[in-house]
Image (cartoon, rainbow, N blue to C red; front, side):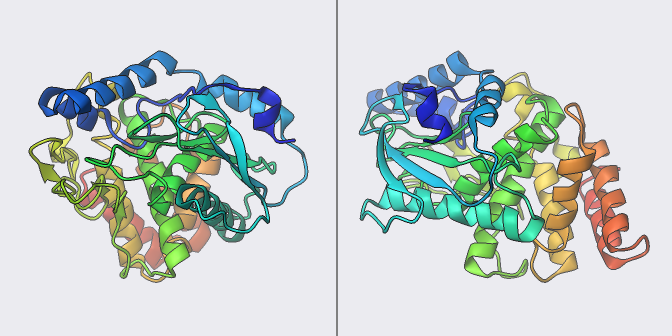
Amino acid sequence: MTARTRLGNREAAPGRAAGIVPPHILRAIVERGDREQRAWALEALALSERLRGRRELLGEIATAVAAAEGGKRRTVYDARGGAQLPGTRARDEGDPPTGDAAVDEAYDGAGATYDLYREAYDRGSIDDRGMPLVATVHYRRDYDNAFWDGSQMVYGDGDGKVFQRFTKSVDVIGHELTHGVIQYEAGLEYAGQSGALNESFADVFGSLVKQRALGQTAAEADWLIGAGLFTAAIRGRALRSMAAPGTAYDDPLIGKDPQPADMAGYIETANDNGGVHINSGIPNRAFYLAATAIGGNAWEGAGKVWYVTLRDRLRPGSDFAAAASLTVAAAKELFGARGAVAKAVAAAWAAVGVR
């Protein structure tokens, strides 16, 4: 019996603001969309606000009931368009593909994320204690988001006009599951710069999940988060670009990507918990610059530095300057004080105006 089945049916409780889709996109749709689009965007915003803050409690419960032994243990459930979690069991660890694209993508994406953390960083699942990886697909009708709720993943199918199904992008799966890793490690507060770091670290490891699954080096990677989520009706490549923040999309309905690429463009705002989905572009670009300067497989160089920093160094209230100094210190310890990795990390943060 998994942690989720012991908890019983319940409605989803995402502890972060709005899942993988930033609130500024949802607000733009509320302002500019047709009646149907405004309705689902408002519903997504209302759900996120109503259930904010419960992730930590759910995480504690899930840890308490998770089995102590390790090993990859995935279970995917089908909500069949409803809101009760987990839903009907659809695929367990070791089962063959079902033919349902969302079920099989959720299963494979969880496996790719587990494999990155286990094989690259010797981490035993999300909590490093063998936590089962539970997911629910086909959540609600035309639901335009995906989120980690504190103990499991939840995926919508998209409305088919703005978004396609949210299991299509393995980096989205890696991103959301990494919010679980952050929850169990640094516990970065979800506001201001610490919140932007929370989003950025999730993007970093989401991208690394995709790069490793595709066998791509840092130079070969697209450095996009959520590529393939938009339908052909939307002018956009992805939700975010780590290489070039601010260039991911520019569309009459959802607006223009507002992410700054450096501290000169840092946005002070009361929205989105202090701009956590916006200002995350700054540390995202720092990681991209460090990884491409180091070269090779990004999960082995810059990724190792960022993981050790997340696991051992960052604290709930850490800001950009703390992340910069701590990643440089980790790079020196891991790869040598005068080595190319430490120099690349320091130069990357300097390039985005963080010192």
